[in-house]
Amino acid sequence: MSLTFYSKKEAEEHIKNLEGNKTGIISFLNGKYIVEITDHSDIICPFCGEKGFDKIGLKDHIRNNRCAKFEDILTIEEESKLRKIKWNNKE
Ligand SMILES: [Zn+2]
Image 1 (cartoon, rainbow, N blue to C red):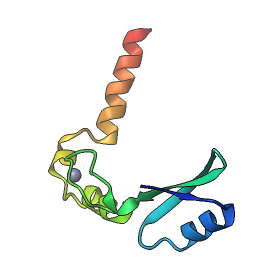
Image 2 (image 1 turned 180 degrees about the horizontal axis):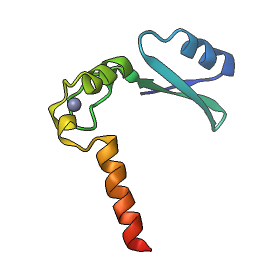
Image 3 (image 1 turned 120 degrees about the vertical axis):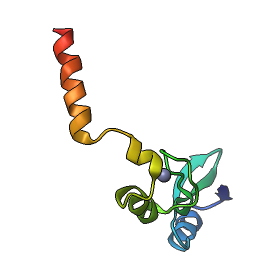
Image 4 (image 1 turned 120 degrees about the horizontal axis):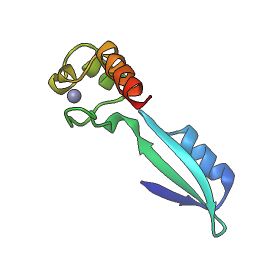
């Protein structure tokens, strides 16, 4: 979502007063200040595609084994072992 303001102060004021998990980025275009609003409470899980997480919710979803798809991918140890094998084959 983006909003247009005619002064930087107004744009900054709007960002300050955003509620929930929203953040805003100001850009200056054609004499106007455009505020691009991002709602972080609508994060999609990159593994299973479930919607509607905020940052903490997504972390909880992945860390506490609530994501079945994430369970299926490699552990960090398995991945680094495979990477080492790949590197060795290159030499
Ligand atoms: Zn998930």
